[in-house]
Length: 410
Image (cartoon, rainbow, N blue to C red; front, side):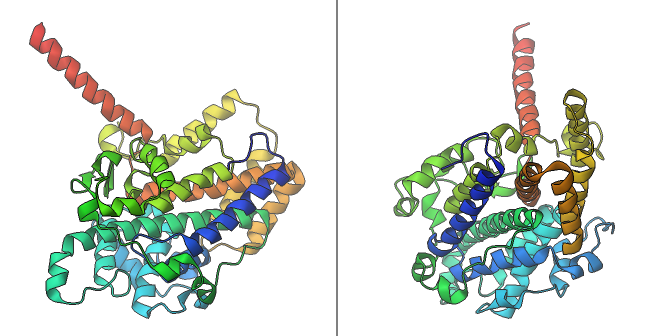
């Protein structure tokens, strides 16, 4: 249950611990759609290691300008990333290499993710042995090619969600200076429902009434609406009633969860993350009120940073700014978003906030920073067009109808 408003710092910390415990339970006992429990645990570990990867920043620094048409995924897949050795237990090297490349892309290079990156990720998921279940013969593989394509969409959704939830928790605990809760070991994982029963492997060819939607004006990943599901399909029964009830609202609104409908249980759980972190809806949804589609802007080079900068300055103009707080928080953000993360720098920035602004500000900063950092990665990794752009698209449609009626009757 979501914590009540007006929390104390201690209550907010309890909410973070609560979500951390639920996340571990989720890994142990909630089955993935396409990925095994071992792969899902490895992905969470890769997300933890990614922020410390010096190779990501050395080989592909953020200041580097990539040429148009560059195959970014191929570049990052060739890097020998800094690894947490325990994360690769029971995972084949080739499988670990591809999954690590995907996760490090999301955590460290979200501004470089585009439709080409996504297509290359899907291709790698399909072609790399050990990610999706292998077919027994060529004839079976041919007949199930469409289903495997849909499972690849689901695998991507799982990877993205698990990466972002793991990263959100990691950032929050890092900012707070608290030890990161231990994840289940591979041996402990075997006792959970997820490992014992394996992925659900939902048959999307039966579960959907139509092929997944593709509309680059909305996002560059495939997506589904709740009305696209065939509720008479036997596979529909594998989706819990609670998850479906929650998911219906997510899929039929303009939220970033739209492209993640292929991983229903994970998407619903990710939605609970915002509630458990007690971030008000208006603040949470503000993360998406940004125009990203150049076709709907006056200037192609007007970035999300520009939009957020203006929003911040407007907020400053109408709200009292506590002296020193902006500098302290800016230092904290800079320390956490730097790659690779330096723990000494984070500790110093944390102490500044704690000493100058108090524990309450530090806790609020931790949850907002963790959630913001994670959620914007979902937006960038799916090419999701945020609320402002979708509203403008809808208004243009309405204006076109009005113009048609005017020309017809006048």
